[in-house]
Length: 314
Ligand SMILES: NC(=O)c1ccc[n+]([C@@H]2O[C@H](COP(=O)([O-])OP(=O)(O)OC[C@H]3O[C@@H](n4cnc5c(N)ncnc54)[C@H](O)[C@@H]3O)[C@@H](O)[C@H]2O)c1
Image (cartoon, rainbow, N blue to C red; front, side, top):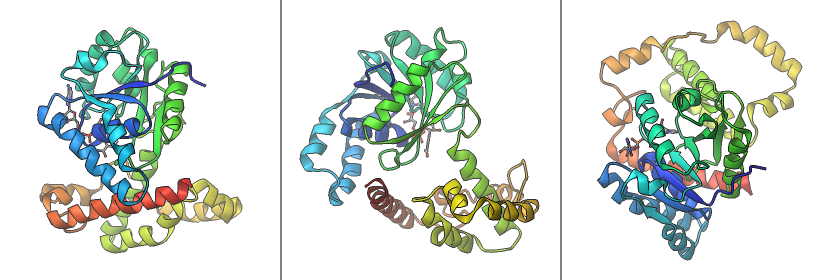
């Protein structure tokens, strides 16, 4: 068990991740303060949270009263000092830039109470680098939520080189208490656990398209309608156990020499970027997108994910 009793949380950054993190903590019973240095983003956050919670309401996963109570536990701070006041934990969710995060953590160290835990939601920056130069790097920990954070249960709690045990365990305990499925990542490695596996899959998927083995549509279909369905219930290692480790060994022996092992981004990806094909935001990536299609896919994604989450966590 962690030694810190975390009830009052600050969330720094109210963008895509920050507003969702604030929301899930408030629903879980924490008193939350939220701050963003973009006043428009900050003032829009309560509406975004209410919209998100409307999907939960539609699926019978929360009541109207619980939504009002949860949103009543969220306060918008007018600056960083106000955000830090009286907090047991501050979760940083500002833009992904090391210099920015270092500056922000230096300010948090000055403004937050000495025993306030400081967590970063970074996707890829080393926790050790973020904590470098701080007087007490032991209170810095990674808390990598997945998008959308109020829907996806997993949070990777990452031990930086100097993270104290009680800090890691207290954040882990808090996340369990608010209904998340945290895991401990014991080494501060690039990509932590989830993104290492996810991008190993993306590298192979892009390579299959580049080699003309299957179209982008068909590669995505294979994942969605075969092993992707199973992954929400059985992880890859449990699946290997069911298949038999001897069979797994035989497959790896024959297959590994043929898999993409490149250490650079794919030339196909680079060509697409050079052509301005940046994905949904530019209308073309591996698939074609319109603003309507994007909106529909995101709203359907969240609804389907929530139904899966409800089933898997029941
Ligand atoms: N988007 C994802 O899928 C995802 C998933 C997991 C983790 N993350 C990580 O979460 C963090 C935030 O990502 P996001 O997608 O929410 O980005 P975002 O751009 O939507 O939000 C970042 C917010 O930080 C604010 N900000 C920047 N500097 C600030 C400062 N000094 N003080 C206060 N606010 C400041 C910006 O105004 C912006 O609203 C990043 O580190 C990112 O890598 C993102």
